[in-house]
Length: 174
Length: 129
Image (tube, rainbow over all chains, first blue to last red; front, side, top):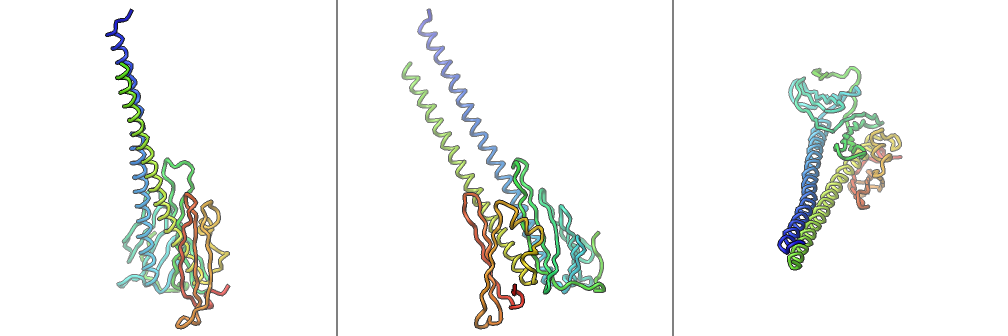
């Protein structure tokens, strides 16, 4: 036979176990939410950084293309002739898969690069002008499953193409 | 003892209710945040696409000869960009030019459409089909 005191103690223990179990469940849910919130903010912050890289490159490229008198494109390097001040007036943009570099007078002035951001350039020649299509390829975050890449395509109107013998001042990045 | 149990049960119900409220609140906030980001990104994408299209028209490039990159953005995705171009003759000081309006649309999460419209006056020969 159990005494009332022992029954009360057993009851308290069972209740305590329940409280601990349910508290663990609630804390687990809240902990998961907190981790998800931090993950979401981190992904959003990285995305913002990529967009900032994109905006910076877009602005600089547009500005240089407007100032240039001619251009040359070899499939990877865009040379904007006369876009810079000074004796060596050419600006070179080298479009790599993972970064874009800008050089002026043979000196690298800018480099745009960001984790999970790719670049691809294509030049289209039109009857009246040429357009450089610069594609920004943003890869999805690591836990995003099978999300497709996000692509932003920039179309920059270029000055007339330089002829074969067009004067350039060299200093192209390799 | 019954009184104690009732107190504990009430406590647990309140705790479960508060946790549920927090979960719902977080889910709603996260959804709004993601939708807002989606909207901003779609606007950026549409602005760039519409601007690229205007530049292609300025260059005299035919629409059907879009580069592979632009075709991927425009056609091969479920959330593809819809581009519409309209032309109206310029009047007044703009006579002799054509007002070209490029409208880029895209559907984002939740079925909402984002729309960006860019216009420019181009010379007639620039926009002849």
